[in-house]
Image (tube, rainbow, N blue to C red; front, side, top):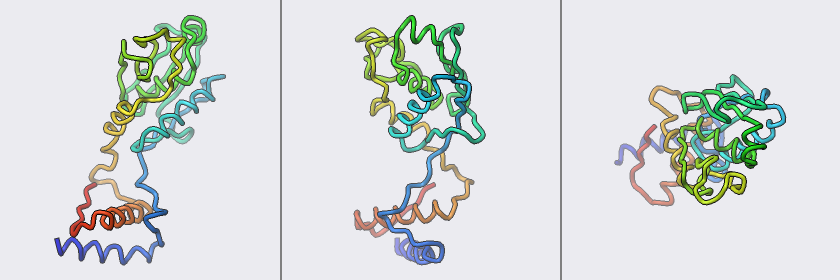
Length: 205
């Protein structure tokens, strides 16, 4: 434990050479980023952005960002065989299709619920049919009301936790941390050590 403390002190002492970061201002180590393209989503582009924002404010380990080398693509059709759906690997890549006839004419669903639900599949969640409206992944078949009456468009704490668990392995062995990430991690460790008054710190990536 003494050796660990000495190593940590020496490492922290070198940080001012890079930049001064305090625990209060240090940013957390970045989450995995999924780049998406909604240019083919027509009038639903704003709804797609809303769905992405909902997830970004609900989870910590993964973020959705428009642009870049998109691996997740959204499309809007007047009618599509099988209705609105997600096709992909359930880990950030694939295609999301919105069926206007199904969503607006047949079910009368809230757009943001549909976009957040389908995006949930891209983040790794399966459908949870016949569960209450409060469950985002109940989708178009909530057990307690008709699809058109269900306006809940945010994941439950359990759904958000599932996504965070799925993406918790983002920092895998072999990925080199940037200087910003190292500074943020060390500041966070120092903050937690002071709070716990622990004599020993373990870093696991």
